Image 1 (cartoon, rainbow, N blue to C red):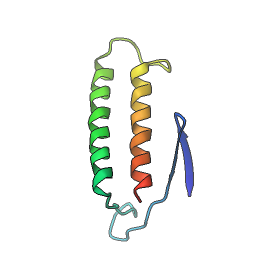
Image 2: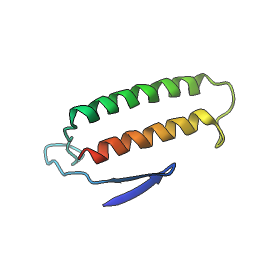
Image 3: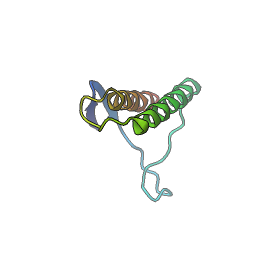
Image 4: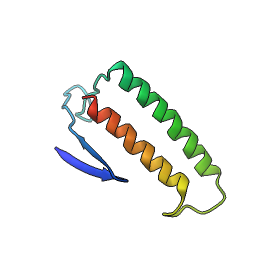
Length: 84
């Protein structure tokens, strides 16, 4: 099992092999509450990315929108990994 730390949120996950998938990784079924959280986080990520792309300042490590996207993505991965 691999462990990745993104913006202070640890992500530990395993992938189940699916021989019918060309990538060898199957999709997992999330509980209803996790699907809802995944959908809400996805919308939040899209919104912040759209704002980030419209921002005239050049991207850099101190960009708060970039940091927000990284935090939201880490939370989304955490929701998916804890629902396995």
